[in-house]
Length: 119
Image 1 (spheres, rainbow, N blue to C red):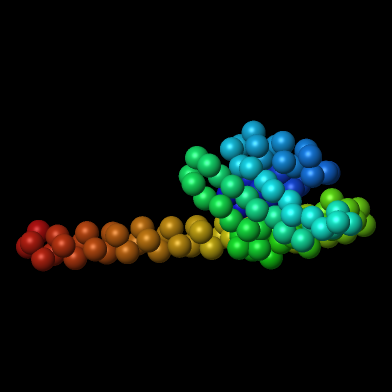
Image 2 (image 1 turned 180 degrees about the vertical axis):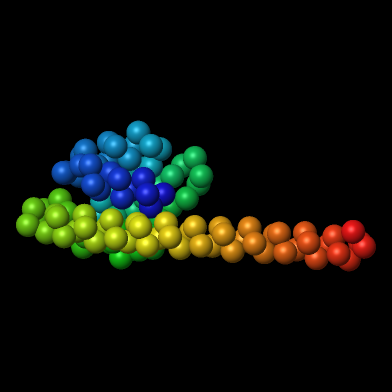
């Protein structure tokens, strides 16, 4: 869900366009706002996968304060997008490393099983 949300953050300039783009990807967004329209929470719902997450559970780059600044403080937009990109790249590298380690572990298990059978 993170890469899809990050892409929408980069490609949209307001809450309505953001929500629309994510809706097209099957993700419903709820912004929680106070009486002054300040965003104090954001919830992402993926009905297909039956997943509901608060933005902050996805990482600090998806917290309510980030969305408040992204949509209501144009001076911070470039900084937010830059930080978002760094975090996405870091996450992708971590996932690649985890997948690589998982593959190596599976190979090792297969080799061990074959040796155990006398092959």
